[in-house]
Length: 279
Length: 192
Image (tube, rainbow over all chains, first blue to last red; front, side, top):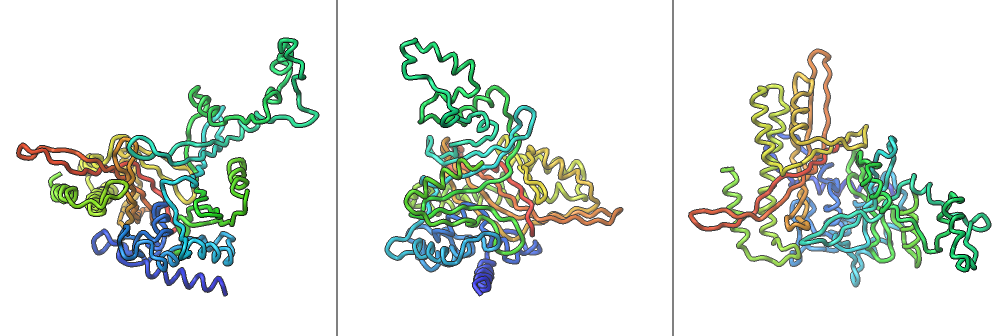
């Protein structure tokens, strides 16, 4: 039943979205409403989520326009911004999310220039003669007269395999009176051990991005291609959602929410850790 | 160039229009005028692509049209192409992309454009120029008479536009206007 309601809603909205985005002359192929319904750019995701454009997508609403951030329009838009075909976001979670985002007292919007959203880019590089998958995390930052996307973090499995700090009994250490010997036993750390990272502080974490750039400057890593992009949003209070691009037949396509999680205290950090460390 | 003059004028007038002080300093009226110019350029590009791809176009004419099409682009612009069967983006210089299009092994090629587009907001980049993306959809139909095979696809084209304030001298007066150049294009095959 729920599914039927969703399909009906999407069909109705898709029909509404179908008109009025024409550019080319008569005789050109006509969109049957699928491209109109599709959230064609991440920019359009922002505009639809906030209700800052017309249903047809051909008019940008600015502050002062009667329909700018109109609550009813937002409700219609946000309900079609979910992946309804493959993701398992249940109707109850969606409803709670909608209620909070559309709250009359404290409506919540997403902002392109603010923090708490970032891109995850799946790329391929050549490393030691092999194609290797690399995940780049990108964020937007102010620079000069405008803004730029920058690389914030990198996940590269060959580097992760190199740095495995031993734990417990297996971990080498410099005994607490090493200073009395002028640290002569550092030889054990650097020459006799294949895990010199065992001798680093608790706070130590390898800086993979610096290593990655170093290898690139040395010519050991070469860019090949990009395979996929997705976005992670933490901008809505107490919620996390993931934005993916769906290229498939039908009306439920383009940039859509594929994962939605209500956050309890501490969850944000756990999810971020999971996203950054998962590969 | 002549055909763009009324649009430049419109942009000039829009520049003088009351600014609603958007944070990006481009008023809605000016944005609308810039969108029109960007769409004109995208429309020209789509026309050129249709001509270059058509098997009825003479080789010399196709080359002339490629020159015209290249003039729409900022230097170093690239096309990034992926298909439903291959996630990797293949990169081509704009000229190379046109040449490959011209050399496609079909007897008949028909390239048309859907009656839909989407234009992003304009964002300012560090050097002060503005950047936006125009999305259009293209239908390609190729027929090989010998094998009787028909190939058809629909691609989404996300076209970068760079918007820059420039100056020109008209009758001794310096006039400022906004110009639009095309940049990188992401070409994605769709399931449509």
